[in-house]
Image (cartoon, rainbow, N blue to C red; front, side, top):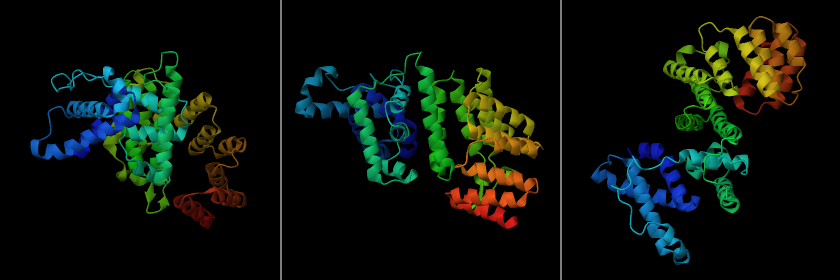
Amino acid sequence: MLEEVFRDEWGRVLASLVGFLGDFDKAEEAAQEAFAIAAERWPASGRPANPGAWLVTTARNRAIDQIRRERTLAGKLHLLPATEVTMEELDDTVIKDERLELIFTCCHPALPLDGQVALTLRALGGLETAEIARAFLVSEETMKRRLSRAKAKIKATGIPFAVPAAHLLPDRLDAVLAVIYLIYNEGYSGRVDLAAEAIRLGRVLAALMPDEAEAHGLLALMMIHHARRRARFTGEDLVLLDDQDRSLWDGSQIAAGRTVLDRAIALGGRGAYVIQAAIASLQTAEQIDWPQVAELYRRLAELTGSAVVELNRAAALAQAGDPVAALAAVDGLDLDGYLYYHSTRGELLRRLGRDDEARAAYRRALELAASTPERRFLTRRLEEL
């Protein structure tokens, strides 16, 4: 029971405390203490009607007590209530939800990207430092340093605990979306819990910014991709879209993702995440409209200027029945150090019967492959040739 409340309420409780105290570390200490008290009391007394308000009230009062005990901070007492806050004074109807401020603070461009990612998972997701370290394959000590540096930078540079002004919001929102998508992609490579955490963060952002089409677009994209996760691997073997067992797809999550996508489109969404979500949706259709997928990739390439998007467009052209045009498009790209450039090129050459060139392309891809499923897939392709 408490674990569920923790996942649901941690970000809101911490955001309220950061706004109240203006200090990440003190806010975390107070929040952790409040949850520890809940773990001790709730089994006997039962879960309160408003667990979030109970936790915020308890945490604020503990923080006030702690500051009173710290003689060196006595000068700050005038900033705090003279008496403890009660549940009657502070319930769900009066607690401001400050998670949006917390999201933008965690993803401030003054912080390094690895710090933004770690702080977002710690502050909004409530993940332990050790969990984040395991997810990103670094030591717990390394992750502690990242978090400490990020918090110190917030304090030293006075990064505001606020939603950016209207003229700054588009760029800053792009940074927030990019951090959440980066977290998802780390999970999508196999660490499913991290992918699910990114979707949860996406839901929070979409709920807090209900009129932002790209927030809904990112959420839809992650949901639709995540619905196919069980079919992407057989043991350690990577399974391509055409070969996936669709009975393993989560149909209800695909439908839910499409509903979110519809909301993004209704808001006038034409941005990169909305287009990617539309592509993902088309790829779950019984009969995939590959010309339409290629057209959407063309629009996405215009928006992003990305050679990788152009590579995906070429793959869609091949699926639409034109491998010659696809190969011509691929050969015009400067992506020699990119694994999927060579594997895509190998596939196109194989389809055109140019087996020697296909083998060379697959061997180059194999040199660049980092994961076991990728290496197994490419080895199998070479054996087939």
